[in-house]
Length: 283
Length: 247
Image (cartoon, rainbow over all chains, first blue to last red; front, top):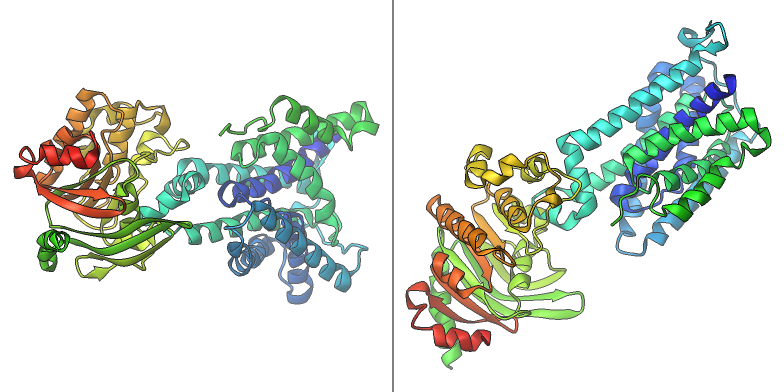
């Protein structure tokens, strides 16, 4: 049971991170390799806000994603937007390079030992559910990620702004010819996807050590989640995120040796049977 | 000699024209597709661009809308020169395009497709009026846009640009591949829109349909406008038109 909960918490991170990747891929057609580094930045910005400015967890939960999102917007404006006319591979290479630079910078200044970040007072302690002990902070992560995932899904699938996004994903030229500023929408979408990564970073800060490699370790799994769910599918990213977290947890109970590879085994099987992913649209 | 004479015949009204196209050249990548297009459209008129496949009719509409990669010459709408403007700015001046491939979005339902183009000016049709023109769309408003029949998709593609307040409509082959009863309905709609004060540039292959809705016809060949025929002279010119179009 404890392992299942752990799986659900991992799944919460997978879902929020792969959601950001899916949003970005859907509109920009760019595989954002710096997503892991941006997640790490979220955790670091929260840590810096606390240690340099005395700004606590709750404001950081809003501020850090905004700050990380703003760096994403700057990155899109200055660099990514120049690559859209080229092969998508260049976007991938650029974001990969950016990720290495960001990780290198943080490693240089903060080392790799990891910095502690306190669980906020409001969420310390836990509940005894009888069959297990549930730390409050972990319950909060699950709740927060469900809210974020549902909110993002709702915004994209049910609102007018979301309709613009979906339409621009299909035919940006025509959406532009209706008088909509598509380049600005692309910039903001990238910023939003990056902010989601930053938010996941803040959520992670109190339970994982804040260290420059935290994103690099996680992002490989998240890419597998996105591939399984279907590139660019919002619903696919969310459902597979939680689902694979749980499956990973279950594997840890029944066959602990396999828990590190189970997601990649599933990815291989899905790619063989349904190459567009479980929720992917066939073009 | 005779060519310059005919050109001035339709370029003379330029002063009060709603849309004035002069010496318009356009390129798709490296390929030069428009070679100096000249024509005028007056306010409240329906004009067609007739011509063979590949003559440059669709490219002309794309160039007016700013969608061709490279273009030179002059496209003036009211008092604004649009040759260097982005498509989104051209749209905001009050011009809307209904593309040949219709451009219905698969990830949007019918109502979302209809409501997608933002309102850019007062005076567009209300949603109720559009549903009144195209009752099928009301019935199917929750369906996925691309699940509609070809005719319904065409109505949706026309309907959604009527809401925005754009007064100049560029319609690219709205009757292509549709059943006669639907073609008839679209013809009725175009005459209705003219009555409501819309100005329409219509790319057409179907001569009979063109004659039933338009005031004037421009003939496009090899990226130029080579002739203009008022609708009153359509029947008298039918032999000449068949020659131009090779039918």
